[in-house]
Amino acid sequence: NFRAGKKQCYRISDDRIQQLESIGFQWASEKHHNKQPWEAMHEKLKQYKVKYGDTNVPKNYADNPQLGQWVSTQRQGYKNFRAGKKL
Image 1 (spheres, rainbow, N blue to C red):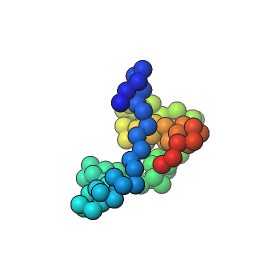
Image 2: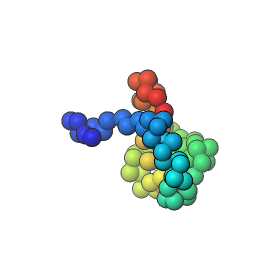
Image 3: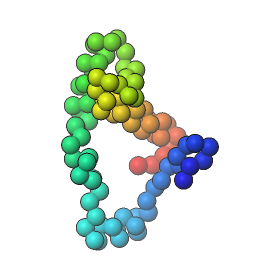
């Protein structure tokens, strides 16, 4: 659902989780298996800061698009945390 151009936070119920797991549902899709661990991306962010003096990685950072997306995801996660949203 979209409201005023923003996505609503979706949270799945415990019942639905159990139903999906009962049929062998895989929570991580194949495309996510190639993602670097959090620690590796954190290290790349530290390298970016040494090079540029800040952590303002553009979302569409041409030199490392994955880093730009990761930073954006971290910011969104922090925003959700501050808003009291549950995982």
